[in-house]
Length: 140
Image (cartoon, rainbow, N blue to C red):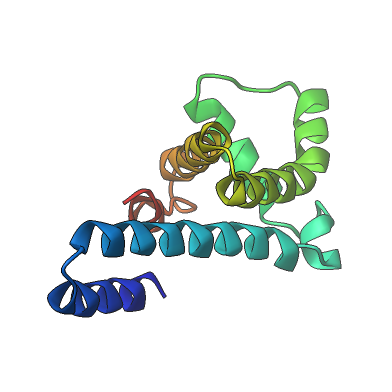
């Protein structure tokens, strides 16, 4: 989708005298596409498989990331993280989507910061659950 938007931008720039206006329009379209992407990612996780900590991938990602960050939770804390991870994931992605769609530049920047934090966490997750190429593509 964003690649298609870039192609459209290049075609419009070639035909337009006001290339800055075309670039601003493309940036706005990309922001809205990413907002929709994160909101959709949250929406499609609203299912019994993801919400159940026994079958969701969220607890695995959270619990393998914590030791990488220098924190090894006690069994009681690990159980709490396991149970909260699906909701935290959905809430985080929904917040990113809403913040990127906000009218306020300050809120948009907060959305970008939260998205970068999410993808940093994904990148720091140890193998075999590491998805650094995906996170680098999203951060770009």
